[in-house]
Amino acid sequence: MSALRRLGGETFRSLHTRNFRLFFSGQLISQVGNWLTMIAQTLLVLKLTGSGVALGLLTATQFAPLLVLGPWAGLVADRSDKRKLLLVVQTAAMLQSFALAALAFSGDPPLWSIFAVSVVGGLTVAFDNPARRAFVVEMVPEDDMNNAVSLNSALMTSSRIVGPALAGLLVTTVGFGWAFLTDGISYLAVLAGLWLMRSEELHPAPVTPKAKGQVRAGLRYVRSVPDLWVPLVMMAVIGTLAFNFSVVFPLLVTQDLGGTDTAFTVLFSIVSVGSLIGALVTARRRSIDVRVVATAAMAFGLPLLAMAMVPTMAAACVVGVLVGFGSIAFLTSSTAIVQIRSDPTMRGRVLALQGMVFLGSTPIGGPILGSVCEQFGARWGLVLGGVSCLAAGGWGLLRVRGAREGLTAAQADEAVRDAIFDLAGGGAGDLEPAPGPAASPLPADVQR
Image (cartoon, rainbow, N blue to C red):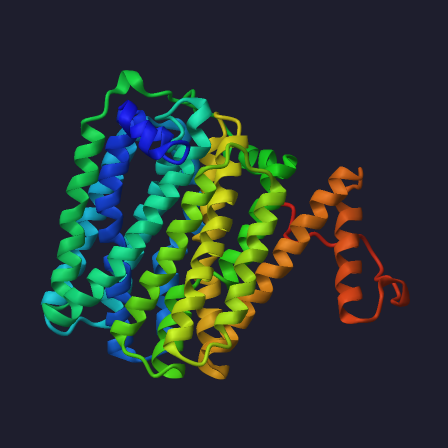
């Protein structure tokens, strides 16, 4: 183990914990399968329909359950032994992949059946997301929490390198059914890892007893802590308009750049290489604050705008590395600050809310971006995503500055509007102030 620590240094320090190694190894295999299925589903729907709106609807069916069940699923995580909960949820997800395989092997699956099974997959994601991410910090000592969170993100992104490429290979050689079947089998790895863990070496958070109003209490808690609220607002905006790669990239590659399905999977894998680099860089940080999250959001927006202007596949691949780096730097930093700054008794609900505004915002953004791409072209979908990242990151930085200068939230939001007016060339002082109180980026009760 000392050799492993010397080899990895600060970047891989949390892997010295046995339970986290088991978790990491099982998830590495399983997440490759998850991405394999996600890409294969996208290509199957694209083959059946050729429609950007259909791709957006597929994304909506995959993640809509998070919008409905997100906070409650987080409460279930807070009330449960997370290891046992994950065993149940991962088993259900395995069965969902086998169902997709059966549909694909049938030869000509109706579109509604693919959407229906995707909804079932969305249900498993709703419960898996808060439980799995809250469980990460229960496997390692407190000093290694940020490292474990970042390595978990690196795991997810490294699987994106292999998964899309494997999907393209299986789909073009043996067909969609074998791609989905391979994903189903991959769940055996994560189930084995969970079974082999030593419960006495975990650091479980106190189990939340049943009581009334616990979901609302979680929402009120998040709204009262700026280090949680500001990243979540940024995540809501960016998750809706910038993270729908599965909608925009296939259309950009096949319609604007003259590429094939295989070229799309190659671009997706290259973006994932940049994501892996970004996750490993973030893993070296021992602390995360809102300024880091806001800066990462802007670092995500700039290459998205550059991707909107690429003339060739070769240029798209170069810019894709930067897109991947910026996207995972934002995702990892915003996830880490939520996991680390949350009260342990609230962690499941806070992570469920973050998952809801990220993954759950995808059903809103998927059809929006699909319609934009269908009406104006995929490049405009990328422009919309890039601008949303810059706006959200700028808002976050100004809120940080406002907190440092002792401004209230309303005053900080007013400073944001002034900055926007200045950028527009008018100057805040030249404009007549709007009547009424300053508007918040999202309603206070977090309704979408």
